[in-house]
Length: 198
Image (cartoon, rainbow, N blue to C red; front, side, top):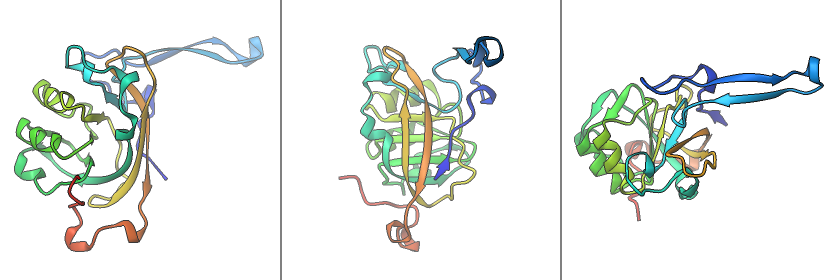
């Protein structure tokens, strides 16, 4: 199993967001047990965006369809701003972008018709418009991944469940990948294209 989650307190912070911190309120030495208070933004580290992040009246983190966050996914390597032509070969229901890349609006429009979940190593999948395109279709947006140990062009089983934060516009996740067996990998010629979404 591959852990693709940032450690929260040393994680990347999107400019303007509250950085995560903790305060030890009880210690084993003084109190016989340890107790910690947390302070953080819902979008620190590895996290999922809920539709409410950009869509008025959209679903909050506790209302997300969790089936979108578990299942077969493709790791796809990219660099820079990805256009529709860069992602048109992707038909996976879940795709994780490895590398320093974001999506252009045209790519987001294409992927929202094919994907249940789109993930990225960046702290943001793209512009506000890109978020609205994906979240208005309830595509799960997973940001702040760490995919160094995952091979581009390979398929995995993703588990990325958000904390159940009622009314919140996003939530931290602990995301992991389970490597697919050789029999579950596509033929070499089809390495970056999965079955078309039914």
